[in-house]
Length: 337
Image (cartoon, rainbow, N blue to C red):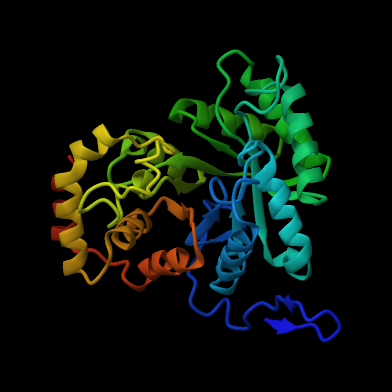
């Protein structure tokens, strides 16, 4: 950080030590290394949020070695605003570092009215990538995801559209999210035939959500694909926030989250037991939850959100203690069931 003598405005200069403490993991069998912790912009980066806070989070993330920023066309609110805000901050702060960044966006959920603003048609995907690039002020993204499978569009149509997006130079790599194991294997076969670099699957995964262990992780390993885990803290349950009840200013109290009070109350004993175990390990619950995911060999990166740079820095401390004994792993399994 330095001050421009002409304007008096504090300008951003990335930390010279930004790569010293971050761990980077290979994404499947690709040539890509991703930071063990990536930053998701699902919340806190829309027009309803404070731009100065978003800017501070992004600067802190890059200074800590986080090179991977994850967006989607409908992140906000309103839709598109996270990409637009990110584009503004990219231009102000990160343009000199573009080649050090791995920027992702997605399309697959509701984005605009009418029959062409959702799911997985060629029409929707080709329009979506053009809109996303325009909002972010980019010539290309490093990875473009199909955000969810479309039950009514042939998978061949979706995969050919993704292939063409790469061939047009609008994305370097392809990913998918929320696909079942069989759909993932079929997508891999189609994209491999098209000679398109398909490298990653983004899946919900946490101590409390183990569905990916029912075949998906095995499929990813067999197909040479990386896994990036989203919702690693189970919408905030795997943090210290709710150990003593529901704070009045929390997202749960205001119904601003997929997590409801009933679900939280059902898990409270498990949460407290896991928090005690984390304390014995010298970690906060959130740090242990992230470390547990990174202990899984198929997980390339854990995708976290942050409402402040302090929260981000706290969660990155998970990297300081990634080892688990067999007894600890067994105990986590017992508690979480």
